[in-house]
Length: 207
Image (cartoon, rainbow, N blue to C red; front, side, top):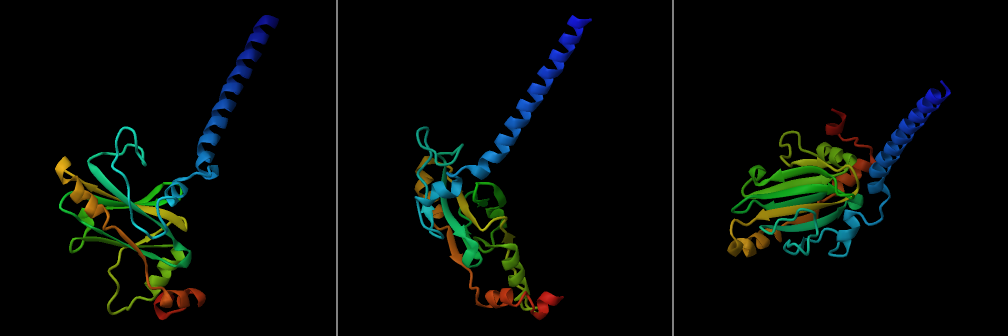
């Protein structure tokens, strides 16, 4: 019985150790993105200023800024910081597939659009914090409301990534030219700033 009891206790301890190790591993994996100092936003900072469009080098086996980069896809990015107000993002729809994705500072995608969402050949959206988007909505003319696509960012800092597909190697320069036309510019915030200071107290905000 004693040998059997010892065996049972050993089995319980072993199982507990395995479960504890699995929990520690799980917590470390989840926490790593939040404690890492060299996140996606920081790695891109050395390539260009906030709101500046930067063309990324063509992906090849020896150089890939982003994982799983495709050498047939030209990419450009712009970093954003919503501290001063919302940002308007524009990108050409292109002659082939094109997309823009919105990333939080750590790289998490929180919204994405393809050329199918383009209007008059342009993919257009406004990024802002929850308060900024509310202020923009409050400033709308009730008789002629804005048709802007407004995207709420989960964090103040992040980046926008544009991808333009090249069907043939010879067309890659055209895809690069399209990717370089990504534009990130501050949205006029004079009225928005007043609304934020007044607690969104416009008539539209009260409805």
